[in-house]
Image 1 (cartoon, rainbow, N blue to C red):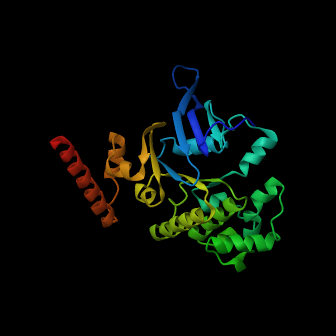
Image 2 (cartoon, rainbow, N blue to C red):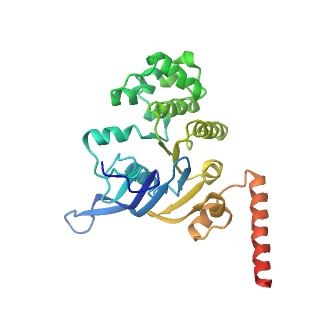
Image 3 (cartoon, rainbow, N blue to C red):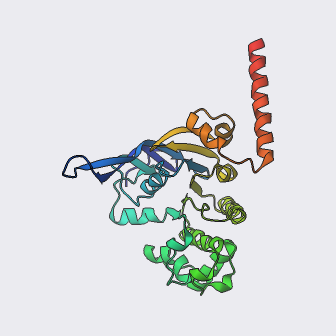
Amino acid sequence: MSAPSSSALLEADHLVKEFAVAGTGGLIARPETFRAVDDVSLRVEAGETVALVGESGSGKSTTARLVARLIDATSGSVRFDGHDVTTLNGRDLHDFRSEVQVVFQDPFSSLNPRHTVERIITAPLRYQGRKPPGGSRAFTQNLMERVGLDPMQWERFPAQFSGGQAQRIGIARALAVAPRLVICDEAVSALDVSVQAQVINLLRRLQAEEGFSYLFIAHDLAVVRQIATRVAVMSAGRIVEEGDRDAVFDNPQHEYTRALLSAVPRIRPEWETARRERAAERAALAAQSIER
């Protein structure tokens, strides 16, 4: 791996991802390309949560897969802890896998239904060729307890758990190798609202305990406001706005961001009150500067 060259934990520069699609013009189908990610640059600092938000099809999940090296970029680069990981292969790519883990949208489709909780949680360690500290059962039970699951259920299968519990299993699996970045790809969108809140609180607690970073992929801005420190808004494969959470929510600059926010139900009145108070403060400061 190359020498470190960046202070950010994760830095993506000018990422482009094109997919081949069949053309429809003429009698013979011609290969064409669809640009799902178009010149995306993104930074995640150590210990922070960056939310990548946008409508379905905006390119946010593809960006997450590029960052995690689950798919290769057409062009652009990804640096992790200052190292270029875009072209990693072999042992270097293998080692990178332990630094970045993903929690997927549908917990049941991402968990092998034929494997017990113990085998699922310890899978990343087996992939890395590492033995669970203290033994497989004790290691599994410890992680289950940390994510709010009954450790005595370590021999159960995914179908024996609720959706929220299954997602906790996925989170425990991601934590098994002590990653420095966890990518949550719509990790709570398939859950009921009450369960969403529980999982969000769990994610925040684990981050406070471990100090890792999140790249949080979501379309639900009400959820994003609960967990993000910075927000990047994607539309048609591009990031159209980025900034601190409160700045983006309280004073959106791009019309697409304003449209997304206008569709968010005001389920938390205190957010709206706080937003109005901050807007009034900014207006008062602006008036004072004009008077001077």
